[in-house]
Length: 412
Image (tube, rainbow, N blue to C red; front, side):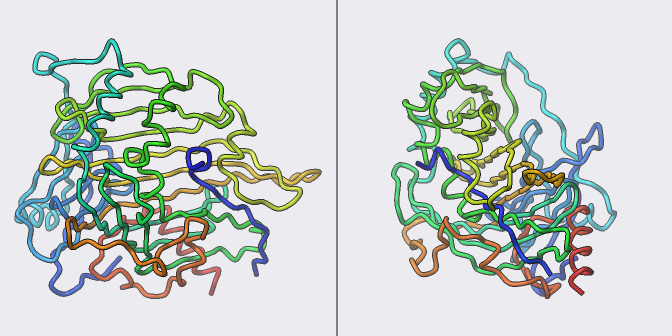
C-alpha cells in the first residue's frame, strides 16, 4: 500500500572509477531575511501569483518572468505576506538590499477560535471541505525538481530537472495523474571511497504520491485518523490568513509505521495550508521496511529520519500545491567491518507555473515517469552553464555549489 511505502530508496554497490539571463525575460534576484533578526528565511514562496520559486536554505532566490509583473508576492509560514512592485524589486536589486519580512503576531480578539476542544473534529471538517477548497479542474503544473545525496557532510550526487505534473481534480482519484521529465542533469562523485550509490526511487512523483490532501489514503481518512492522537497547538500566520495548528502523534500500534506531525488549517476556509510529517522511528524494522527498497548483502541499514513537508498556496479562493520537500537520513555499515557512513537524501520540488481547465491534457503514457524508476538514471550530465534558460529553479546553496564544483574537479 502507498501509505506503507511512500518513499523508497535503493542502496546499491557500484563500481566508481550563476545562470545567464535569457533575452526578453524579466528577472529579480535577491535574499529574504527576518526584518528583526536579519536571519535568512528559507522556503519562502516568491511569485507573481502564477509563476514562482522558493528561497533556498540561505534565503536566496531568482525569479524569472516573461514580462514585468504588477507585483511580486513573498509568503512564508509565521510571517506577514509582503508585496513589492516591479520598480521596488529592481531598486532593491540595484542597491543590493535584502527583502525583509515581518514576523506575525496573533491578536486573539480578532479571531474566532473554534474546534480547540475537539481538534480531531476540526480535522474532519477540513477533510469534508477538500472538494471545494482545492482545484475542481485538471491542473498541469510546471515544476523544478532536485535530489541530492550527502555522505556525512560531503555531496556525492546531485540530480535536478524541470518536470510537468498532471493532477486531476481533488474530488477524485485518477490513475492518469503523473509526471514527465522535460529536461534534467546529474553529477556523481568518482571517489574510490564512495563504494555505495544511493538512489531515490520515483523521486519526481513526489507531487503525485505525497500530496496528502489529494491522496487521502495516506492520512486524511477516517480509518487512518483512528490511529492518531490530536492536540491543538494554537494559531500561526500562513500568508495573509491565520491557521489552526493541530499536532498528531501515534495512538495505537499497527503493522506499519505511523507519523508524528503538524497540520495547518486555514482559520476561514478550513483548507490545509501546510502539512509536516515525520515517520515514527520507534520500531526500526517497520521504518526500514517503509523506506528501503534494495541493498547489498551484508550491509546493515539503520534509519534515522524520514520527513515530509508540503506547502499549499491559496489564490482566488482555491488552494493549490506549491512546494514539497522530503528528507531521509540513515546509516550504513558492513557486518564484521568498521565501515560506517551517515547519508542524507533530500528531494524537493517547487511549482513554478501552472495551467488549469479544459485545455489541460494528461501526460501521455510513454512520456510518464514510472515511480519504480530512478530520476538519476533518466537525465544527462552537467555540462551547460545556461542549461535552465528562462525556467525558474531553486537556487543552489553555497554548500551545494561547493559540492558540485568538487565533483566536477574530480571528474576532470
